[in-house]
Image (cartoon, rainbow, N blue to C red; front, side):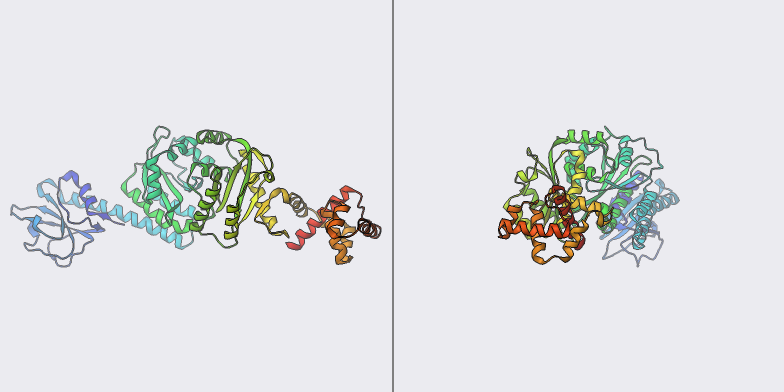
Length: 516
């Protein structure tokens, strides 16, 4: 975090210095000296007059000099080894003005160091990222946004500045960038290459759709982009120091961001971005979706199913998540695979209207599920991309209910748990006595294991006596006689189909209560 010798020479270019540079050293301080040339270091700039410069000067390390020629004595400064030298003529400069200029140059670096130290102090005191952004805004004095890797807005500051930039204002208003801005960054090859390969900040110039330039810097973990910093050039022009500060901020913030749930890993593609927007935003803007889908050639209306892949309880590291993501993508190569909240999701488009009627997985996919201990939740069909959030909640419920199910499967359809969901919603709002039949509860508490097993199978078979008798390997009349005994003793009407449904709901409720 320092000014280089080359940058100082560039700042003083108007004074036409002669530059001798052996190595571009970082410089953090400067001194005016008249004697005592013995204890010099490589990280300071030493200003002196030629008349005071020793005639025989030798050093084993790089030393930086700014020498003012105030006498006509010939002195071949080019012969000095290991020295970076700026040569200025005395009659072309004002010494005091020169020192002021150098102070400005070095103080800029001091500001950067001070800002960095403030950020580090804030992180060490567990300040939130929003407070840290305020610190950096106070230095940059331009509006700032931090988004996740799908460009969904997570933090921002600088709303008090008037910028007259609709694209930027909409970004803050809707938490998501304008589709035309997304189109620019996604199809800007130079931008994409810089974001992917470098951690340094650079300037985006899209003045055909924006009023101001944007300074951006990726935040990386293990060379994967997990966030972006954007600064709008609306209040003051960008400087090299601004770019340095952003580079420092990106590196300092990375460890904090990886633990922030707003910055869960997701791919940086246009498809991932639109899905993240639909799932994260409480009030999606129809015009955003319509325009973005039009730009990306994505259908808004079709037969959709959503698959949600859940991992084991162990935390999935980013590298492992990326490895698994690539595997899943190779299986569902003709579908939309994206990452949301560190879960791999698949938007499956089909001509069928029932997820059980088409083969959404292969043996290879089942092998992957076995190897990584994966559970897959599958939603009901939906026809409008706007409804993907409803489908996502269904996949989560399918995954949750599968954990309390007697049958542990890798593939779990929400439709199989619809009654479970209905019972759960009822249980959290009503007394259990309102859903569990009291006569049936008495039967459960007093009947033998044989009768309990018989009743469960009978209810699972929707009151079909023949099917139940066959599965129990008993005679039809034997089962009919046993059921009549239960009917007489517990007042359970097996001929009423609605009552059978109530018994099925009672079983689900009891299973749910016992498992949770």
